[in-house]
Length: 232
Image (cartoon, rainbow, N blue to C red; front, side, top):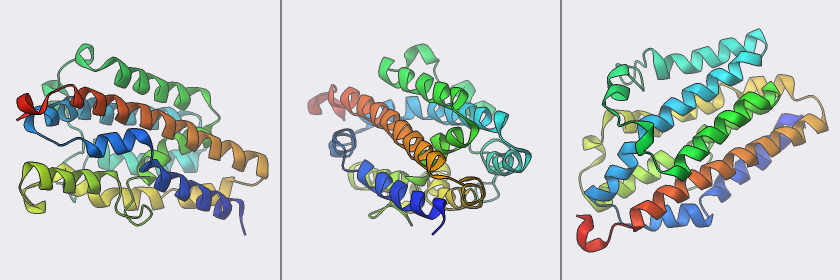
């Protein structure tokens, strides 16, 4: 069994356990209402921009073949995804997003910390820091559905509508990260060549998932501050 095969088993268990953490339980336990949904909508463009910053940081130190793989990944996000008919994040969306000064302190700190991990760790660890955030979105890995799928179903249950009425970006991300996860498996297979590196990559995945918990938990706490009587 290759080092990547062993690592893959462990990180797949990690992304499944992520949904059982207190922060995720709190987030998925908060009833969505229009006012509470606005908190998620406010932060979403900034989270996506942060992912772009972090992926480019991982690309910076990586070998050429890995730079190419990351660029193929980022073309969907920044240039054009044929499934969406547009980029996943456009200039117009960022222009319409309120400034970073309106973000919750806890979410802002998590975004800064993700960037720090992506710029200070060795390139293969940086790759995992970012890869794991999409691996937990892969419904073929996460039992019960990845993050976007679960949140989309929650929105339908609590705010109404159908899968067809979800915004196009949400529908694309319900499946896009299956492909985005799989495209880096050959990279990890090629470059994970010893136990020391394998353990470092696992730690990088765990560190990134801690930040993810902090980010989601902060959102959940802010949503809970809106009383049910005022949340509609």
